[in-house]
Length: 453
Image (cartoon, rainbow, N blue to C red):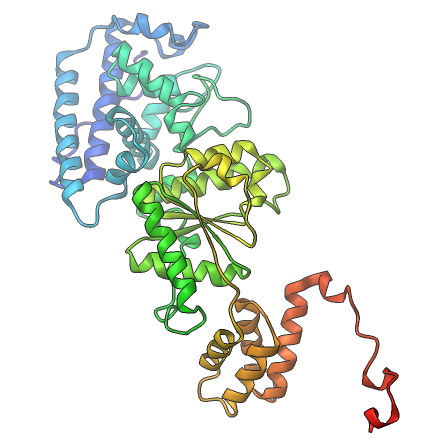
């Protein structure tokens, strides 16, 4: 490396015990110093480091570079401190996000080290400047797989090749969307890479990825009476059976006519068991077909990071995409499907799938739920009886109608609620609400005179 290249900062103050982020920065700083000193000792200029066409073969040449003893000692000391920081982090409560990364995604120790170093460099301006100078590629600037692999491996050829496989197409770090390339073309070993943006924010103590998709059940969801005992028992039995078959990666499909009610029921039952539920985006509605699988992959990754159950609603929207179904099948955590109908093709991808078919809510069940929503409302029992027995409306329609009626000028009355239910049903059904227009009334019926009197 030329003398004009910047050098890493001097060793920082000792890292306090338990400071995982500080230990990562110290280790990254030591690695960059080792790289600079090794190539400076070998007389290798930064601009010549990436010239050979076969980038991977260049590792064999750099492996012969002599490593200065002082720099190597500093790396060993920093690695020992980092290992101790990881041990302390695994015992801490709550565990730092970086300490959860390896066990959640089943990454090797070297792969976690690479993520820790990459995050330390990206989040520290001085280290980022030094690292970009160390790359010195005349074709591409930035952190590349080749640079990170040989740096984290301390110029060890075998370790560097293993890390390159993890960073390459199909490797663990790309498969789990831990890293990404700025460009759209197929990445190579000399193309810049970075931590995936939501993961980078997550490692910087931001809310974890998928927080906006976490289903938080209401405290009294199971006490409102919307689900009868048979429905609750069927869901609990299906989850229990699937958990016995595969405790860590069970597969359950719940078939019910009301997706919103099924979602809330699942969230409530799984919350009782201490499990978090993350909703997976539906397969339809994306502008580009090629963009549909990235949200799915991110959602499954987030579910693994949080140890959550992935909830896939309307799985038929993914059945037309074999690649997407294969990704769901390869997911190492639990998955629950929610659908309005049974789909036999699901069993082709999930032979151990347990299916629970829920009965539609009975009029009495709907009546109890509407009565709970109309608490302290005049004539609540009569209104609940009429709505529950005459309108087989989904849960979201009933709740939206109650909210609309409460906000109307006349307030929540029987007339305002009946009108709101009809309005919300039209919104829920969309164009289907106008398929059979009402054009006749009782006065148009041809009946005997005595019947009309």
